[in-house]
Image (tube, rainbow, N blue to C red; front, side):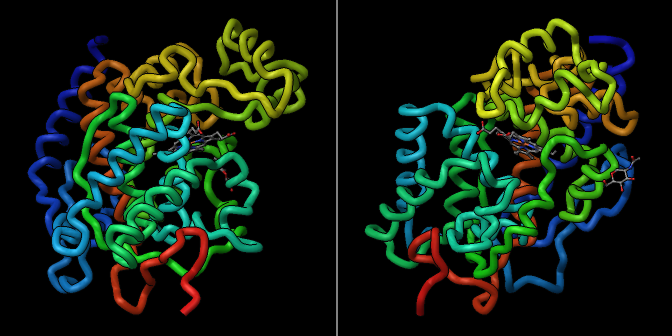
Amino acid sequence: MSNSSLPLLLLLVLYIIVASGQPYENYDKSPPSSTSESVYSLQVPTLDETNFDNLLSFGYYRKTCPQFESILHSKVKEWIQKDYTLAASLMRLHFHDCSVRGCDGSILLKHDGSERTAEASKTLGGFQVVDDIKAELEKECPKTVSCADILTAAARDATVELGGPYWAVPYGRKDGKVSIDKEADMVPMGHENITSLIEFFQSRGMTVLDLVILSGAHTIGRSSCGSIQYRLYNYQGTGKPDPTLDPKYVNFLQRKCRWASEYVDLDATTPRTFDNMYYVNLKKKMGLLSTDQLLYSDQRTSPLVSALASSRTIFEHQFAVAMGKLGIVDVLTNQDEGEIRTNCNFVNAY
Ligand code: HEM
Ligand SMILES: *[C@@H]1O[C@H](CO)[C@@H](O)[C@H](O)[C@H]1NC(C)=O
């Protein structure tokens, strides 16, 4: 570990200790309203005392569907053992769901002009896993468990399945009834600048630290070559590849990505393991998406990348905390705000 990242590492450790003291039971649905720019101020999320009737809770299905998590767990495990790429699909699907109208299952709706039909949703997957879990739950506890809760828990179990951390998920999200393709196309696609990524996260109650930590999800999974080919040959009209890419890595990518429809690992080093190699790769100019690489060149985020590259333990702990925050973005909990879908693909008919 370099000397320069040591103080930051200590700050992160301190942050973890402070953040861990925060009780999650009856966590308010609105994310911490910290608009502070600084990731170094060690703020603890506070409960909004006035809004105590619309809460997520850990015991939400304790009486109505006690077998929910065990059913979900065995299904997720079964699917990933058959096809490990589904783990990454589920994590990304959850991110895209929470990014648009909050974690309300709106990405799952299948109708003309829904989020699922958007350009940004083209390579999303894992829908069949959610459908399968939902079908099983409708047999065991009909009309009880929301698709939004299923997807949130499935993303957690998928992370664990690939060797990542566990975190407790509070439940009680309602499923939304609105899903609009144009809104889904606001989700970043990999060619944005850091300012717009930070703004995207902050407008959803998350911080610069959350941006850097959650980007670490790219330690697993793949990108279609179509998303990165613009970096390989004639970058910004220069006739050359993107100079922020390692030349050997460019060479590898040029051979791997002859066709836009091919796929390439986001983490070139350990693509199947949930570890912190993603950050180590960024320091070696081996970030596949330009939004990955920029995290190491921008002053607001590069110290965090260095700190995370030096400790897998800190990354995993922080990832669990940040996923907890992602999972409560703008959730619907009121009776009149949403519903419990019986089929995750469609709004209820009645
Ligand atoms: C910070 C902004 C982000 C950008 C710009 C971004 C962009 C992308 C892009 C372009 C791909 C490849 C899509 C394709 O061409 O097939 C991808 C894949 C992926 N993203 Fe992100 N992403 C971001 C944040 C996140 C977050 C927060 C998560 C989860 C917590 C996540 C999880 C994933 C996963 C797991 C994959 C691989 C999917 C698969 O293998 O099927 N991403 N992302
Ligand atoms: C970042 O991107 C946004 C949206 O495309 C643009 O409005 C802004 O000018 C860009 N900022 C910088 C510093 O390039």
